[in-house]
Length: 213
Image (cartoon, rainbow, N blue to C red; front, side, top):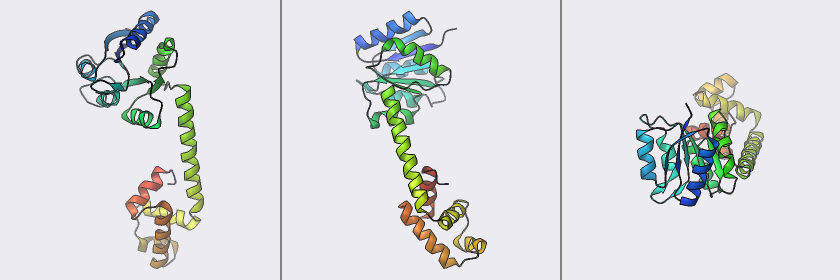
């Protein structure tokens, strides 16, 4: 059985090009090709194709809404590729956070869409080269920022932060490290300042998000 596919694209010419590439590729069974969120939502709920190929900017909504539908228990579709003209940070991050497994720009050669879908079905994440470069740059900047922050924390502060993340109180931490309650609190305040937070919960969240703990 060929994997089933739904195309969601409001531009008729673009939709026809995608349909032609899929049909000629003869690797997938196209069970729907529509131009609106409403029509796509009905197909996702009623027929649950294995793959959703969707644009983002649609007449009655956004493709991200369709991708988020894949989390619903009554929708068996679990894989989605975005194909769009939008390559900016906002669109990319929203789509990936919603659960998209791939992100392709429309200026790429559509004949490669079959390869991209196959790659995704095999566990890969097909992403246009320019989007991949952007994501690698963002990852590098985030890693660099985390490294800089970790370097700014003293060895003792990092030690205390680890204990705070495990739920110990300042008094308990003082006993473990053989320092006074006031010394621990002074270190905690310094950690808050460096992390730009105001309480323990925020400190733990930020430290985890930045990969410090």
